[in-house]
Length: 529
Image (tube, rainbow, N blue to C red):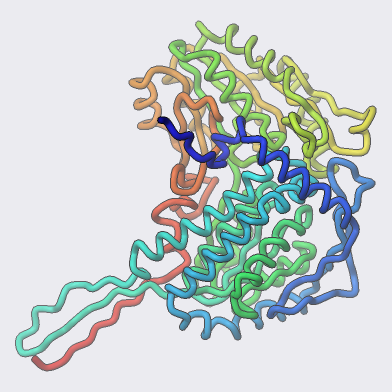
């Protein structure tokens, strides 16, 4: 008798979920819709904190829909949050790593239990379709668990080193990894679960205390994660959550002298600004973990399976409306299969369902805000002049979607390789397609950008090995129908970038990531023999 393996949700398996996932999501969505418009506090030292000024978070699905009222935190709130974390650090640092692991695993379990609620919130807050949203919540729990597993696997990162060869003396050495102090986590709008909870969990299990500053577009999901950390029993002050503008609250946090390290995910310009500020203004170099986007290529060989390539490209180009740092935004196709692939890409793209992402069967929701909506119109107009719009290039202004930021998935061909939009990250559902005469030409074009986050390839296995050897990116996929350049999962595909896409060369959800939240200390004890 063959027993059916229990379904495990990942970005690669989300396309055929069991019915239970839909049912539970819809229950949580209904319950959350009944709470729209309530006020949410900041969480500092375990207490709810309210500010004089507030801001509304409206859904990009329908801008008439107010999801919640949030606090416009001040520079004083930033200082209070850092002070709280600093005061809590000695006790959390001394907490045995086994106890920190226990509490963080409990937090991960709570996030798992609440993943349908968090997913429903995320759909309304970000515009993710239901499976992407639930997947983000589940990935958050998995990232935290993976950090805990790495701490356990490495015995708290305490290692006995060699004894010195002294005569008449016994000289022992131990290497210990210790936390830095107060860690700042600045998270982006597109993955407010995984890219908040992942770095927060790693920082915490390592023994740091944290201050979470979410993107202004997505404050609610990180609030729910903070509640899970606190409900798990993590002590007051260890986890702090503040909301407000980057130019005031955010800058006050980055500039605070008691911030020992920062994880930032977002634009290249903002991330490099933090990196340079830390280098120029601080007393010493502080660890800076940056993930700064991508301009991710896919190369299609003349030997590729066209259906697999087309499916993977469309999923990666237009999942989450192209607003993934790993989205497939450039496609290079060998000439013999170019016309066939382009025809199939257009066909699949035009079949994508655009609409309310909470509805079953919808693949594409809205872009995140008015600025992105306007950028889409500007970029597509510019590309239409330089090349040919194969499909898309329109905004949706009629019917039920007229109050949201809905746009059509866009494929563009014939744009000269000298055009700047081949290299500029647009962060929208726009993908440029180009013809190449050889794989060597394709890899040269693929690597000729400042970014190096993800890349994809379709062809023979021998060609794939050649591609792996020559691509300049941190996460690379070959012949993957689930996504040409997207779909990394903790413990399977560690996620991080090269060049302008990342600052550390160590990938989240991998074996080298957790150590970045600690610094090494050697302990040498000498006694007489």
